[in-house]
Length: 131
Image 1 (cartoon, helix red, strand yellow):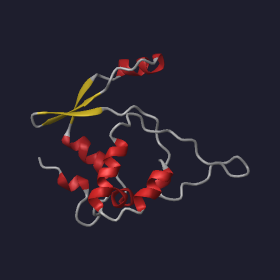
Image 2 (image 1 turned 135 degrees about the vertical axis):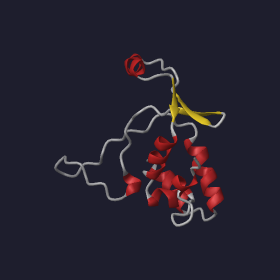
Image 3 (image 1 turned 180 degrees about the horizontal axis):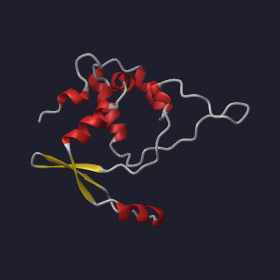
Image 4 (image 1 turned 180 degrees about the vertical axis):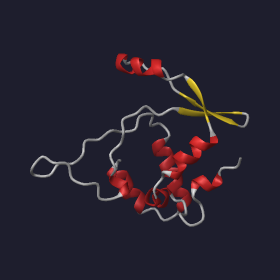
């Protein structure tokens, strides 16, 4: 997480502007930033205090493409040799089912929803899926 960006977002009152800032900041990120946990004096990792300080996983994020009424996850080719080995296990294009979308959207914490400008009470993203 970019802590400075999160702090700037907390001061934006207009939810539409806040959502636009989040979209502009995140649209180009294709890798989940893996950060090292903060260590205490003994070299032990400090506990995660809230949902906004979680550590990223470091995985490559796909582009989501819409074809008709279906969504597809498209993984871009990488130039790194290490990632080439991982690419052999992943198809370049894969159907993103409604159940997968629902499960991913359901994982978004209430703190993150409020930070993005969505209402926890009235606008949970998983409620917006129509099947």
